[in-house]
Image (tube, rainbow, N blue to C red; front, side, top):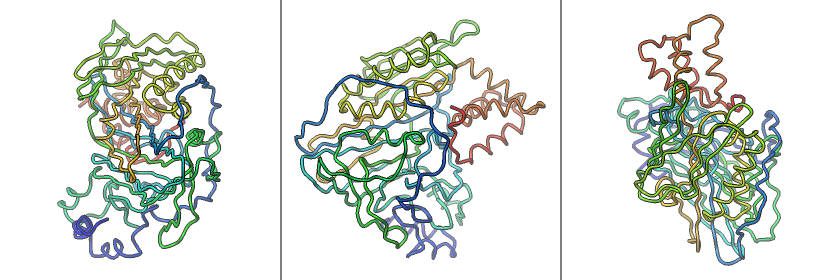
Length: 471
């Protein structure tokens, strides 16, 4: 942190905190709280279902010419049937390996988010070894997780005191201080120097077995390995860290350039969706999915949506067996990611990483390819020396709460005090989407919602949990 930005925050802290927020008691740039040892085995987690997606095919690859950087990632949002974004997306859908740095581990998250930025990974290609300085900014959000270790980040987290941006109980001394710093904004992480190793270099990255983490799908890419050396965490030197990519995640509050709302359907049925591109650039390929327990279907619009235009699309009837549908969709998405500028193995790694969540989570959703200029505005990426080419492909995942789902959710809210706990079980089964679905239902139920339903929202809103069980 710079002196100019640090002083207002220090002035807002109680005198007992000032010492804790300066000198060696401030947590290191690499992690929050205790150092994270890359040699530590990943945390125990439930085995993942086997990967059945096989996109296959061939596509573009690095030709060995010049310094090239590629990135892929996804943003997840939830909208009500009216298209209004619902908050509460800080819950995790996939466990991350224990070696990943996480600013949230020491705090109780109390600031709900509209947008969950998930798994941007940055690949580097060069015919020869080079060094690069890399910085990612998130003007309307905060970077919450990353790997390898960074040299600095903002906003700060204070050892034994918490996170002023995310913690509900952070000890601000005045309302002014809370107004100034209790916001999800102005995020930044900085890798001062990374070594982009030679094309043939061999590394031993920390363990992340595919039967427990989707992390390693991103390693199956023929990019140059990268290394961060002389990592200093909490005053203690750690082993050098090596990976096939840079990784980060974040939480944000900002509107997207595409508004998506559910259409009214026939009696007892959901209609389709209406998409409107309010941005200044054409949106790439659009996929509309409907997933049920054992069947699903999708509609693809490879032409995307021109700036200022709208698209009305019927959510298809779920007629295909899940495995066949998932393979067809994977092939279609890989083809569009290739066309959008990714190398073929990158496209496959992205689809394999998210296939279970994108393709198999029950519900109606839209996946669309964000224009690169929108990505640049949302999460500016600075690399020195400047690459000859940078490709950044973000897929926006929009979970649409249909009118039929809203009707069920509202009834569950109204009956929250009924014996048996069926209403709570209903929302528990929604996993990471329980919070945004409950927020929407409470808004629709209004005065008919009992206090117990609001109390349950407070409980799940502050729970920092992985919710794969509900997927």
